Amino acid sequence: MVEWMRWLHLGSAGLLIGVYGLLAWRWGTRKKTAFSAFYRTLAQTGRLILLWEYLNGFILFNSYRLPVSGWHHYASLLPVAVILIFQVLPGLFDYELDEKGMRQMWLAMLITVATISMAGWFC
Image 1 (cartoon, helix red, strand yellow):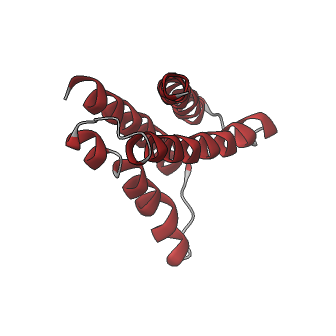
Image 2 (cartoon, one colour):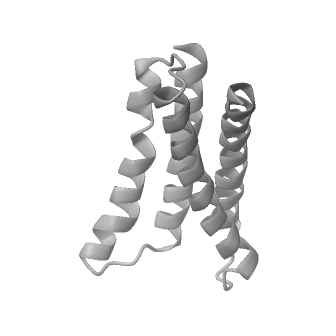
């Protein structure tokens, strides 16, 4: 069971990198057209996968006591900071992100998930 959860953790991290990369690319190449239902659904799916990733990592570390680098734990806070900066704070001040801001948010999420993966893999 533990090995299965470890592979799911790695697979969902790779899936997150793919989803965030696709969303960053799509927002970067968008030509003032309406965002399709597919990409809105993909964004929501990315949020659910991120939530699953946190839950899975929490279970692996706390329940099964699998060792992981401290850097991996600290880097895991980066997506929370990105969400705070790009979604929570603008919502508090009644500001909506423009296309450039959305592209930067998805690119930042891509970079943070890649950073977390590298911190878990190499540190």
